[in-house]
Image 1: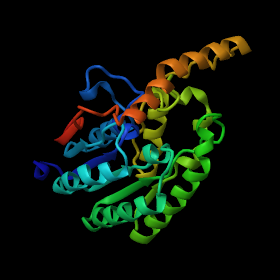
Image 2: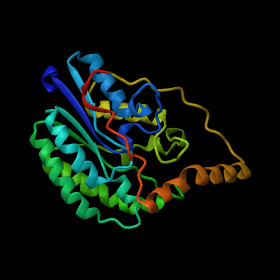
Image 3: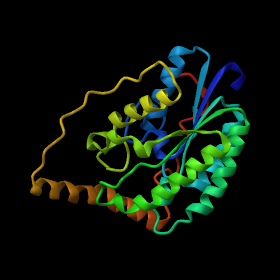
Length: 255
């Protein structure tokens, strides 16, 4: 099937790449996301561009590499994006150096396939009272990813330095995933790295709500009950938000 396409864009990863936070009930798994938006622009410019998205929410580095790299290579990609590691960094304990040994091997294989490989640094969550504690781990991860990219000739999409994502309107109500605005903004960042002339449509920017202390406290309590609590329970019970889900687009398609 890959022979039908001259451009073959394959996206690998977790919820970030699957598109969680950018709802679209008409699409597989009910989400759109930055990768779909990038594919739409590539396909608008090239009638022979195909797109596959193998990402599944909740996946950690080892699962992403074990489940997605071989199917990606089988599609003979010309462009590959890979973001993996956020779900590992959020665990109580993580061996970042150990994980990135396998990551390094996977990137080498993807680059050796002839594809243009885009790797993402992690987001700088220093302004978050909850996720800011992971800032040091993310910085270590990022330096390793940059080194791997330099070593193999991959291209960095430097999420850490995209300061527009410090705006809370870029984030979904769960405070963990990008909103539709965030996904569209990321799509344009990726298109810029690819030096593509197309631009993804960006949703209207809603006003930033101004909350009183009481309203902030209520919003935080609601977030803990509806999002943080269930997230912790999944970790304690060994479950994942991606359990039972399949990749959105396991084969090359036109959107």
